[in-house]
Picture 1 (cartoon, rainbow, N blue to C red):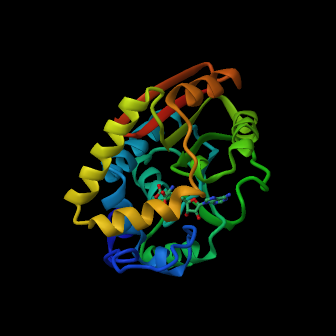
Picture 2: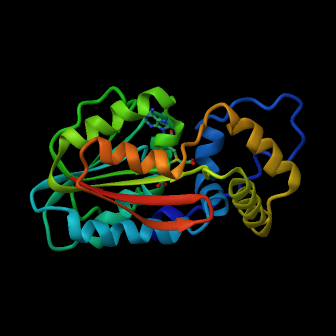
Length: 248
Ligand code: GEK
């Protein structure tokens, strides 16, 4: 995973006052600072990515496929590739941002993949998923239109082998508004501790308002259970960022 952390360029996208903050997009500007941005915005992101590699050791089956959906710079793919040594499998990383995939190619150019790895530029809603043992949606479902989320999860459930796992990481809302406000503030304390200014935090929040509509913890868990996942466990949480393990 260290390879994806080389060439670190500092995120200063929202550092200056912007008259009209536009909706957030995964364009060249974001792709070029993404590693810094994601580490300073999602608490414990690097640990979470590392631990997804550990989960992969348990759930990736020999001669199967792994999907990294909404892969950005491929941090999850790299983690799985390095973590699961003793099995043959293929990794397919999908993102609809050409800018992200160009940057992925650049940051991994000297990396020797241990398993066949391919990228696909596509909207994850439009692709056919082939049978697989491990699918990861690491902070991606939250960017889909709320109405499309269940269909996406249904498609993943249908494509997973019995016993296979979906790792779904999401920023969540809390059911209780007071709890939600508190954890929201704690997350902003985290961002301040990472060197983001009040202006940067506020402008990024505006940019994300329309493109990232959050579900509550109870909605996330119930939706996965209703789809037929045998086991749904919240295995990781840092403030309002959580990850679920859903086993078919
Ligand atoms: C990581 N998983 O580092 N189809 C395909 N890709 C999409 C779609 C879509 N409909 N919507 C958004 N994306 C990564 C981090 S970032 C999370 C994921 C964040 C892609 C988008 O282009 C971006 O690369 C990624 O999902 C979300 O573990 O920035 O908060």
